[in-house]
Image: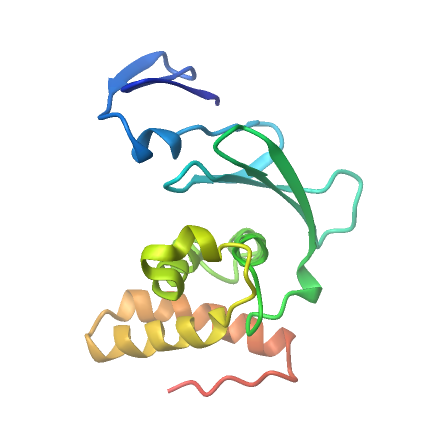
Length: 179
């Protein structure tokens, strides 16, 4: 799928539908390069940054390729080994790769959206500027899990708990303090 942008509109070339949008920042988040044969996930963020996640061709099972597209459609490729990600000090592209890996492996369900929410909490109004910074996603995700349990959102709580069950088992040197 490739979405092309013109001022105020974009065309989804997969099904040919044209939709009108107000001009501005929102338009820039809609440019997505999506290769149906390779890409496992794609997300567009306000301000024009977009990401696709795929498995690195001819690489071991835990090597992922995250491509970052900026507002000028320049591409930056980031090779990520899942085993080297530390959720206590990770960038958004690293956590995005980890979320795709855990979702595909059946360890989590739709964890990609939880990671996106954590980025918003970590960055607030400046989330775009903090995407590449190493941040403590582990702590924020844990706080999100505790908050969802207190509010009675058990489905969301369980989604996050599945991540901690996976992560703590595979990273024994970094124990979580689950509820």
